[in-house]
Length: 111
Ligand code: AMP
Image 1: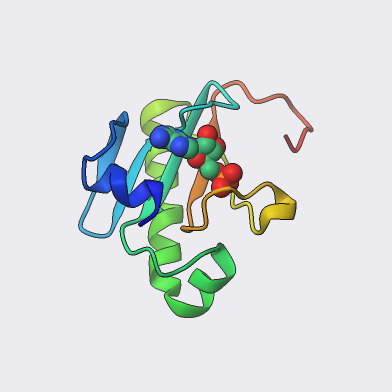
Image 2: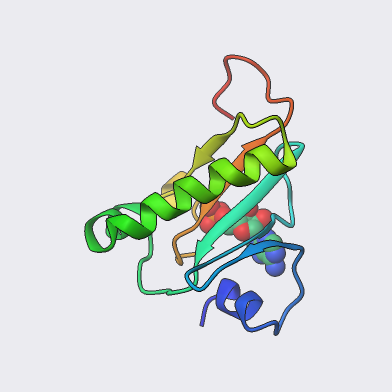
């Protein structure tokens, strides 16, 4: 069971900002931007965004729509959506999740 499953099950605490039948979103414990949310499918059988896109593209589209709604609610509506894919790219939790970074991001930077 991934650490994100444990958040869904309320076994570990998180600052949850959105939940539906299919998704959960909460604040990243180590924020890299003024607003840093994680949007996570409740199903945990996709390790990364490529697997998700191939296996359930509708769920990927739901993540994007949710990121958009949350960026409007918690920032000015602009956001950066990051999926780290693979340990070499910095992925540490192999249960697909989107980082939603928003609020006062520096212009012209990728990180
Ligand atoms: P990644 O490195 O792309 O796999 O992203 C994993 C993210 O999960 C990191 O940004 C962590 O800070 C975040 N994270 C790990 N544990 C927790 C937790 N218990 N609550 C909130 N965020 C977490």
